[in-house]
Image (tube, rainbow, N blue to C red):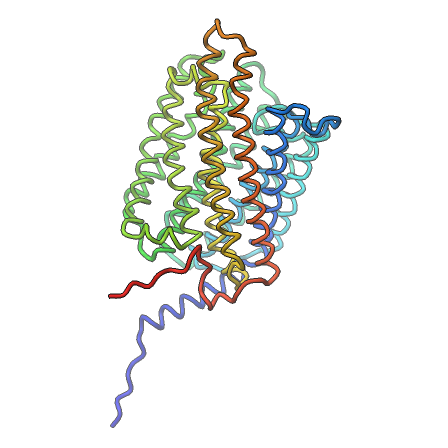
Length: 486
């Protein structure tokens, strides 16, 4: 009598999980790709505006004759395009897809998300072009004309409500680390944005309270919106790509709650030496020092998870971008804490050193991790792999070398700029001349970054247009992995 072998239960479970993920990805395809496409569009627009603003710093007669492209307008429009456009829309993209994936729930209320995406894009359009045509509001990070914020507020409300609704419908009882960060972000950012708009513009408070609120918002938009989404994304991608769990669940808890407790204190160190109460600056410095706790916890967790798998960085685009961003998170956070010290702040304040630090956090950390997410996520939504490994290499090396050049040039130039500004014997004209080579290096870095972004945008459009092999053929690598013989 023949014995019929029982099917392998593990194989059955893997097939069932794969089918479930495929159904979730199919439900996410339209809304998530809508947000992702919008993000890529604003990335390219913001890159062009950034390059124009950068060139004008050392060549002020570049593109003269048009008020719309003066340095002040181009720079403010760039910040809105990449901050509220690219980075925020990429953050929402991550929230939507990762929350569905980790909740094991198919996407719900797609029409609500399309409406949110349309409102957000209208708001970004009004912000960018309103600034270019002279309606900017000269408040750092809140430069958008008064008719743009209502669109962001409405879109934020819809996205936050949707995120909570999906979480409540989850089929997975375990709450993953990434979900903590996403839920924190969709609560913190609407609160930050609404309070800042209300106190600075809608019912403005008087005097020194306005800059205090401005820097409370400006610092925390990175720390309590972009940072939790990007860190949460890294917590998902690194274990997923290498196929092993996060090193320590307890370190994850420490990292999340320490970020929640301490980051919101940190913004006031930008006003050290200004007309604010001394206790406020001191409390901010203490909060910045305490930020070593979550940063070290996240750094250890990511490094120990990667241990024994660093060779995969040679092959996987998603992993390489993500690990680059994770390392930059540690560097930017350590630097930011040290910059809160009064002795360092006295030199670094009001210089290009601050600009270098901001780009280390907002670009080298946040944007690079979002690039990693797109390289991992998009093929799973479209069913096609990336068409060109050459374009991926151009993207990585253009952005990696570009942001490194940018950071080094402005950090060195900005530090000595601060030293000279504090020396009354140094003429201001001499400082301007000293900075010229560093500003020129900044523009070279901008060309590299823009080249990388264009390569990325071309790859993205090619993938959406149906170019590239079917996913069953395997992922697109930088180079094909070498199989090691036993």
